Image 1 (tube, rainbow, N blue to C red):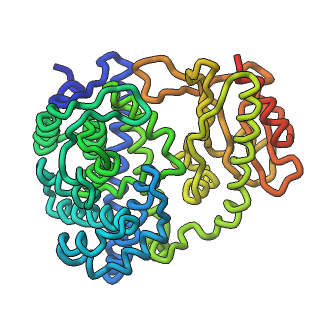
Image 2 (image 1 turned 180 degrees about the vertical axis):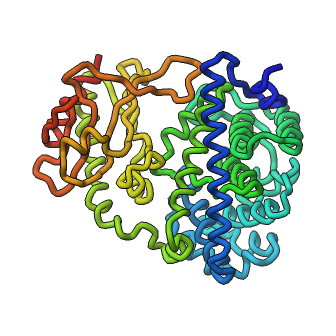
Length: 447
């Protein structure tokens, strides 16, 4: 049995043993190892900043996790709202679980935040003891998240589906057996912690053991796995990562775990880069992290919406469409300004008239070629194009495409400009209006 086979033994996942697949897996594994080493170093520095900051810092991080996880599921909670509710109910959160559930059960809106917040709190406590949860403890965490619902803490009794796919989740009668397999594997896991978190997350979402709350549970358990192994929180952001996250989950449901593993490592690296900033802890507590670039971001963030609408209109005239995947938030925007690829994210998937995905538009940092040609010194994010990769062994579902000479290679949306879109074709750049640039790109994408 090969080395990769040994890594995935006991799980529903595998990686092909051909040379290309082995090399791709090794690249992601190396990134995960380096990410953990950097994380441990950074968190040791953070710990020295003062124990008096630990409680507000932990609350701020947990509030962000809860807000983003809820928003992925369609529950609209901002970080500030979760943080305010956590402060308001501070004493209840520190008391017995039963007291909290009884006190806020009559307010489902508040419980959307507090139930998940308390579950993260409990999971963090378990992680500090290096404990991995057993099956009954996972059900108890689920009951915390969904308290008041008839299905809280109980496995499903009727078949359900994995949203956005046609794949079949575990049948109700299979769930106890599949969950037992998952927990037994987790108890004895010796794989890279980032890979462990990925497997736990993917496996639970594929089983889909509960009527609701499966996604929140999966992200909670992944974070628990990471916390006990020296990694920072896995903050999958609803605005930035949603499209790539769902695409990678769909691939994992087909048995291909590499895209999700690669995404999780990318998300962790992004967090570690931000944690490396001076005064990171105090800035998180004050909600002022990256405040120096906030003004530029506020000016820029309206342009992607305008460009998306214009491009969508152009594609519709050809029978094609574009599916919005996300847009950089403030922290990702700042990383891209610093020419850091950890800020990369998906913008939109372009699908043809049969709804088959053909192209991916994605955000990256302004290329060296465009920086040389432009000479402005401004580093707003660029939009690039990749094509669907049909190679089943590929880590990423899309690969960069080298266009024919004269075709669009890069676009930058620039606020406060009469013609806000800067288009690069090879070594030629042009300034265009949003509608003009959308029409040009749509014409090149529609085959």
